[in-house]
Length: 121
Image (cartoon, rainbow, N blue to C red):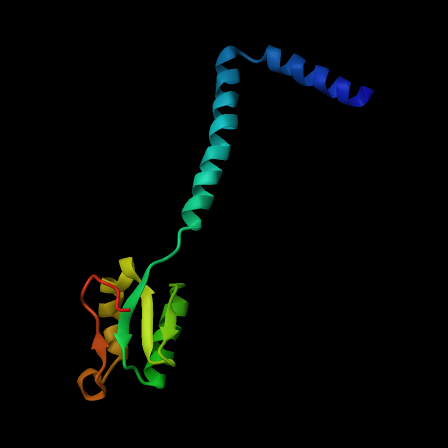
């Protein structure tokens, strides 16, 4: 226990030796760092709202598109027995343009690129 007391006395001595401006800086960091970590953790925990990007895809088209999305580390889901591709709502417009080149037979296969801002349920 005497070692902890010595450490405490030493810390107190060093704390008192700091100028008041530096003590304020330490307090600001000590108080704001946990809040920043908590807010960052909370932001990461928000669920991602997925919306339909393409439907009625053939298996080969799904493979091409998912390979591209994995390469860019974009979260996605494949639904309807592997025929529909769902992506985050905030990325749909950008991905619609980028992935259109992977879908060569849009009209022949009946593929639908969803353009409305509402999610397809």
